[in-house]
Length: 258
Image 1 (tube, rainbow, N blue to C red):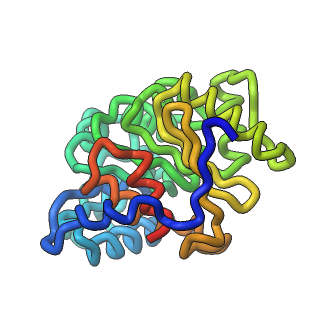
Image 2 (tube, rainbow, N blue to C red):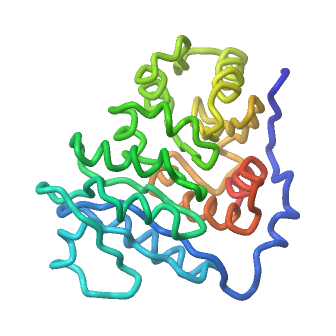
């Protein structure tokens, strides 16, 4: 099938050699609100046990009263409902670390929606958007986010449908479509938009970048339907991209196998 390659084993094992023994690099984990922030802390703790030197949780400042003033917590302006608000600090924060993870739990409101979209569309550092953060940006206008080559979006099929609908993209992907149709749509989509798309569809993880699509069966990875959306996969994608810069596609595929 043109534009498509299927991998059942890691084709880029050599990228693991670039991961140093000594900790280096930095990751910002964005997310959380006044009612939910445990997932963000758990993922940051997982990252701190990897070769990443500095891991920081970026929270709305409403949580500053609930959490201790630790050096790995960064508090930014929040909305009245307790989620991140649009601010110059948030726009600056996405360019401070080597890699950003927009993990989610932002709360569903128009103010935070604009805040996250505004920050991501101007991100100059690799930024992974996943879980309910994808739903949040799809509720607004993610056109400029998709036009940013530093963005990686990890989406389910329904989430990708929402993204396509929000930008009035003429074709959509459904669960019932054959793989050939899905590959063709992703091919054309990623020729139009520079962002990297990781799509989970019918048991396969499809990595699409610059019109090229790679398929990895979920059964070939260490993940399952239960663990795919818990956030752990973000830690591996972050690590491989930090130590293999400007190789989004290869680094992300290698991360799926680790």
